[in-house]
Amino acid sequence: MTRPQDLLCPRPEGLYCPPGDFFVDPVRPVARAVITHGHGDHARAGHGAVLATRETLAIMAERYGQDFAGAAQAAAYGEAVDRDGVEVSLAPAGHVLGSAQAVVRWKGLTMVVSGDYKRRRDPTCRAFEPVPCDVFISEATFGLPVFRHPDDRGEIARLLRSMAQFPERAHLVGAYALGKAQRVIRLLREAGHGGTIHVHGALERLNRLYEGFGIDLGPLAPATTTRKQDFAGALVIAPPSAIADRWARRFPDPVTAFASGWMLVRARARQRGVELPLVISDHADWDELTATVDEIRPGELWVTHGREEALVRWAELHGTPARALALVGYEDEDDD
Image: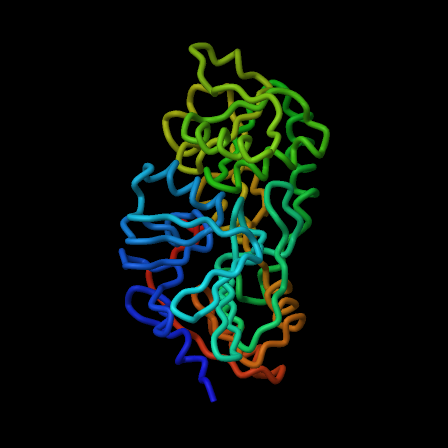
């Protein structure tokens, strides 16, 4: 009988598949890699060969240059690729544009590596699709019962109310350059904000990439000016580091906001000097993590990174054998 650890096992480089001789989201350069999405802690340059979605490959090329790997192969969602007798396919993860779960099948055994994922609707990427499997390998970034995120539409409504309440002030929204910024912009458009949104220069290339894949972000303009009064009432999206930098001083009495699942922890908002915390996360919260395990009902649950112990304990109490893999090298782009 094939054991799960014969198909996927942790190594210092990351999660390794011995029969297929490849890694999933390795943290250092390897000969063959399957990449779940474009965030830097999962998608690193320097691999010999990379398999990922077309969107993820485009993101890696944008961030690292066209020669980010020796060879790159694009796979559509659901397309089966053979790796030395191991079947690999990609399923939507709902995290950011092009994000995927890695589905690995061999000798009647199916294992699914979630990568980073969320279960909520996101107008900028394909929704998560549960895949029946023998072993589900899940992230647990927000794997504690205290993390229950509100409806993102309500958070966007709070931002728009603040803009109406303080029309003389600029609103600076800190949002990560890949995924979060574009999602916030699309949610604003869906909420009826049709005006120009100003963006920090660090977001411009990824915004263009998203638009190239059919994500309409509406009217955007650079957040550059020599006169503060030009930005009275303006909405500006920038990397989180910028809203705490001298760059933010160019705007009139700015309301600083930050879109992150960690804004549920008010102490983090205070530490950053955030006036308007927006709890908008691209990761599954506690209820979504547990509901996903309940929906898939895998034979085993493995937890790769994040708050591992609580999710492992919950699974065991609900009759699913579970273990923490304690992989290192992964950071949360929503963290400090």
